[in-house]
Length: 102
Picture 1 (cartoon, rainbow, N blue to C red):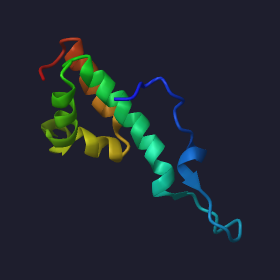
Picture 2 (picture 1 turned 45 degrees about the vertical axis):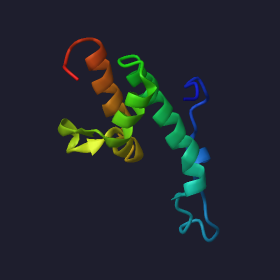
Picture 3 (picture 1 turned 135 degrees about the vertical axis):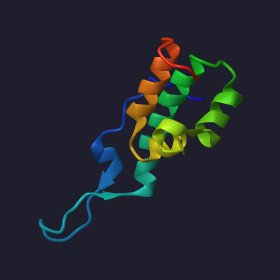
Picture 4 (picture 1 turned 90 degrees about the horizontal axis):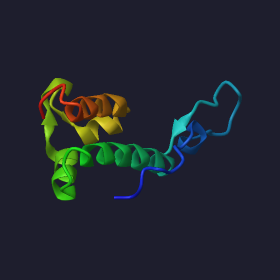
């Protein structure tokens, strides 16, 4: 796992603009440009999860495979991909503070 203390990707890192008239210039998400955004968010979630369970294999397995009931049976990875990193982090912080069960 890479350290999380990297610069957060900006909107310009994640989007590129196609040519054409001003009206046609809409932000387009490029897969190549989206990767740093996902990597950064994934690393933040994995670091927060590692504060709860130090076993990196279990943490990665949880991130990819375990479905979270309160989020519609989606995995943490699916939530991060859909832009809901903050919801996952809120849940992990509540677990760490003992406000809820795993």
